[in-house]
Amino acid sequence: MNPVMVRMCQEKGLEAVVSDASDYLQNQFESSIGLITGFHIIEHIGFEVLFNIAKESKRVLQPGGIVIFETPNPENILVGSNTFYDDFSHKNPLTPNSVKFLFEYLGFSEVRIERLNPNLDIKPMEGSGEPVERLNKLLYGPRDFAVIARK
Image (cartoon, rainbow, N blue to C red; front, side):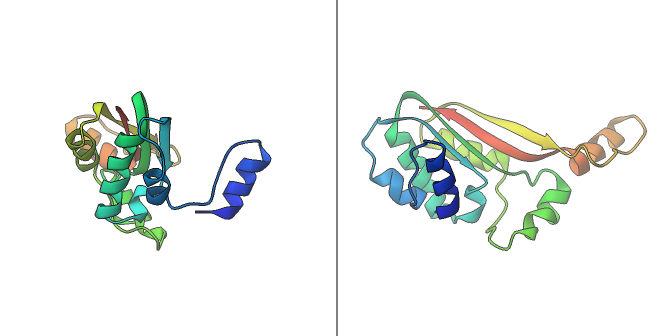
């Protein structure tokens, strides 16, 4: 939906179009696409649209095709309670468990969650033991996660 990004892709010789993801997928043939990616888009849409995009992704993926969606990780307390809301267009945080469940529910296989981008700019709390490890994970753990699934 970003004409500037589409133009940049086209200038690099890539095929790109300005389109709503849901509309675009609905206009594709069944089993016609090998890979679908969406980086930091699913937190900007409501559940009905997310469900439709996931369902249409399953329909248009070729057998064995892969879908990847990355989004902020609210398991990191600083993300879930603070930095997520720096972007006014974010609707609501999505949890890894809920996104994984959605793709499993729709019949994707090999559904997994990859936790990404730990905060390396902030030094974790010093100390040892379970409480310190848990707190460090909650505060400084991965800021994003991706769902990766195969048709």
